[in-house]
Length: 111
Image 1 (cartoon, helix red, strand yellow):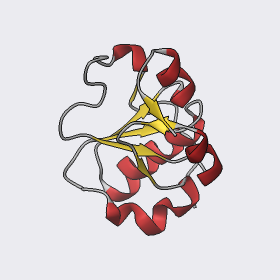
Image 2 (image 1 turned 120 degrees about the vertical axis):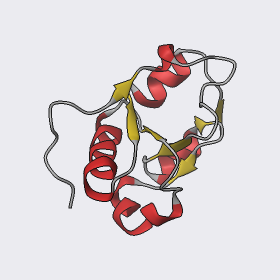
Image 3 (image 1 turned 180 degrees about the vertical axis):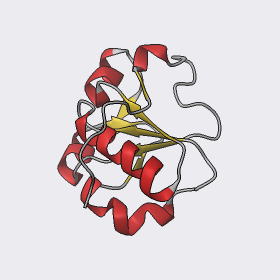
Image 4 (image 1 turned 30 degrees about the vertical axis):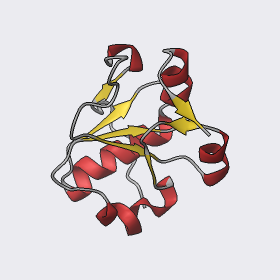
């Protein structure tokens, strides 16, 4: 379903985000973790579409908006980023370090 990872996936680390507004205006924050992970805590304002559901549900996202993709530590989100960019033409960026790095940077998490 998803292609093998390419060496270069657009990425940024949560430490590069503005703590007062971590998700740039007009950007969709997409969480691709499983439901139990989402329920345990997720970034405020994120949209939840598990990685396995993404091929069937990517149409729920605004194709014109940049997408910042997050998972637990950055692996699944990198695969989703690559797929969104290559297969469906989105402008997606992987959040390196995932929710672990997001929370570690002091960015808002809700349950």
